[in-house]
Length: 177
Image 1: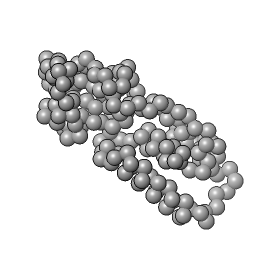
Image 2: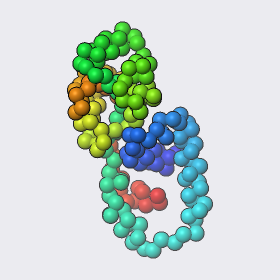
Image 3: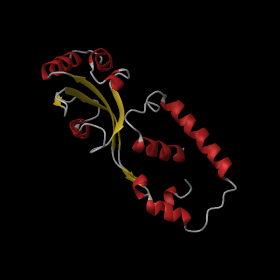
Image 4: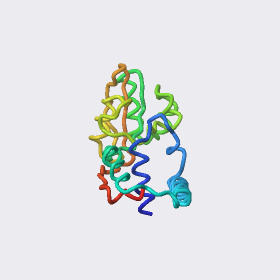
């Protein structure tokens, strides 16, 4: 279970926003898939001999892989104007489902098809509008942002569905991986 948790954190830290693989699996399915992958890797790699110091050298050269930033599972609803964003926010506050509104109205087609879900993001993540990452990092779990202006002039409402606290792993903790 510890190995699965570590692998989940590592996967989420390097997940591409346009990769919907993790979003399409339930938590149980994802854990089962990772468990099978770990078992397969152990069976395949059992006879591989790693020279003394090679694993430590790899760790030192790839430390950034083992220094995971805090990640926010984020959903967005992108619209053309601030008024549209405010209207959507009012509807959400009155009980409308964010995912349904995102599917119906969001201009961000990739996330719209997933009910606004853009997966796990981190602060200052490349490929994500800085306004989104900044808003996500300041939001409390389950709370909605005020309309935020994006680089392209559109507006978004952001919600954080899950937070995974950042963590750094020592060589000893990841040596077997």
